[in-house]
Amino acid sequence: MKKQLFILGTIAAIALSGCSTNTKDTNNSSMGNMGSMNHEGMHHSGSGQVPQGLQTAANPKYKVGSQATIKADHMAGMNGAKATIVGAYDTTVYAVSYTPTTGGEKVKNHKWIVQEELEHAGDQPLKPGTEVTLKADHMEGMNGAKATIDSAEKATVYMVDYTATDGQKVKNHQWVTESELVK
Image 1: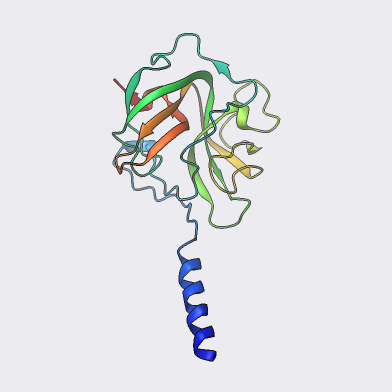
Image 2: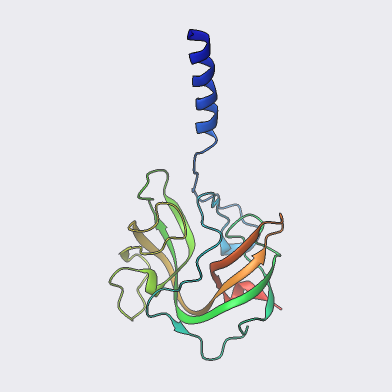
């Protein structure tokens, strides 16, 4: 009986050790200042639902339905992936640092959160260093987390479908900026 309990306990420990979520910034990017993050808790695919108040882009460089190549490494398998544009929106986009509500290490320079995913943000761009509360659900522990804005820029952001370079199909990924796409 003790041997069976020991075996069950060992199996449970092994299974649980494989379920950890490490979201710290590795900052090992060969792509300049884009940052390379381990996004194991990231919701790669989304519902396609956009935040309330987000405005469709009037004249996006990449039209809905067009193809582009992603030149960003927010997640493994993203850089170099062929994407289909699902939506294009004009907003202020932010890189933020926050500690997940689920605990764990601080996530640094997470890209991207849009103005409409910040609680009580109003319609004016916020400055780096401003403390905010996130309404986004891109990663486990993000929604409701307190964050600090690292950078802010007015930009067209895109929701995209793509097949990662490892073969994983991703639907409605939020967000890629116009500067992170090439034809």
